[in-house]
Amino acid sequence: MAKLRDRPKLVVLDLRGNGGGSPREVTRLLGAFAHGKVTSYFCPLKGECVPNRTDDSVPLLGARLIVLTDRGCASACGDFSAAVKDNGLGTLVGTRTAGAVSGPSQAYLLDDGSAMLLPKVRHLGPARETIDTIGVPVDHYAPMTALDLATGRDPGVAEALALL
Image (cartoon, rainbow, N blue to C red):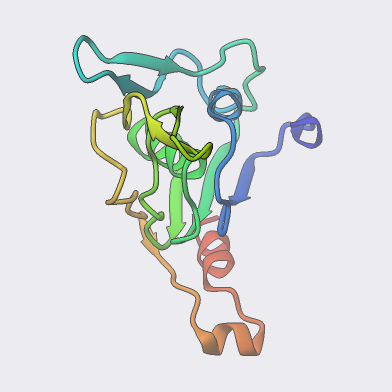
C-alpha cells in the first residue's frame, strides 16, 4: 500500500498463484478502491448472514484496478476477486479462480491427538453467490499455456496492457 501512495491512475494486481491469506487484509486492500461496500457474507447454518465490509479507514487511491487471476487463486484471493467483480471495482483477467473459499474454520480435536479444521460458517460473495467449488469467472479470458511459459510470453499481462 505504501508504494501506491503516489496515486497511480491504474493498478494491475497479479494474484495468480496466490493461495490466500487473511480475510482482514482483503477488506483493507478493497478499502483502497472503495468505501462502504459489502465484500462478502459469512452465513451460519442457522440465523442471518453477516456482511463483511471494506475497511473505510484506508485512504482511497482513486485508481482503476485490473486483477490477474488463475486456478491457483484461492481462499482470500478468491474472496478479493469476487468482491472486485461484484462491486464493479475493476476488471478480472486470466482464468477462473480456484473455487476454494470457505468461511473461517474451527478446529476439532480427534481421539488420536490430531485435529480437523472445518468451516464454522458458509462464505458467500457480495452478490450472495457461492464461490466455494465454483470459482470467480474472469471478464477477459487469458490463459497461460505451456508455449507461453516456454517463450516468456504472458497473455494476462498482455491483455491487461491492452485494456489501458
